[in-house]
Length: 187
Image (cartoon, rainbow, N blue to C red; front, side, top):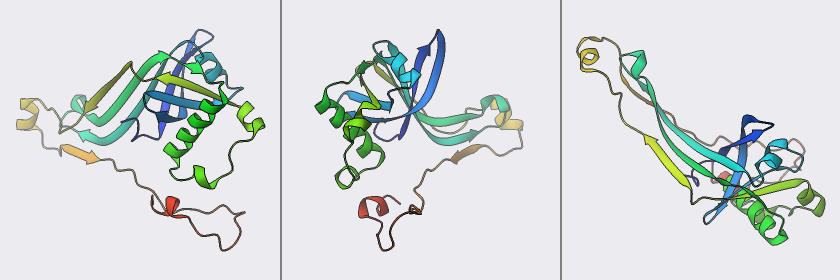
């Protein structure tokens, strides 16, 4: 499930208040890597403190015969643990590569690697995935028998399907630069 998602939500406590932010991530084995600006209060607050990372995939909206029974079909992974700051240069580069390859497969080998300045401006956290759980809801509505017998409205599932669109080149891209296969094959 972690490999199927693109964005996670990082839950931390900042100045005594809960905060949840969308964050890019990548995974190497049992370690989840999260990144952001080294100036980000949320990521700095996540260092060596309990955090919660959630990845949710929505598969459909469940229409029931009663408003109470409407639902969502989804798959969700929740990882709890202590995040640690990655300072080791080799691990940091590997974690950033995992993140880039998770979000944009095939791109790492075609782009410039981060400079020292960019690495210094990037905070990378590592979170062990051994404390994780998965929750799934699938199937049709769970209507009450009375509602099935008397309600005269449509009930069922409206699937949610995420697809890739057509690549949109950067306005500053030189003429004649073709869309590479690692981008074109995703759309």
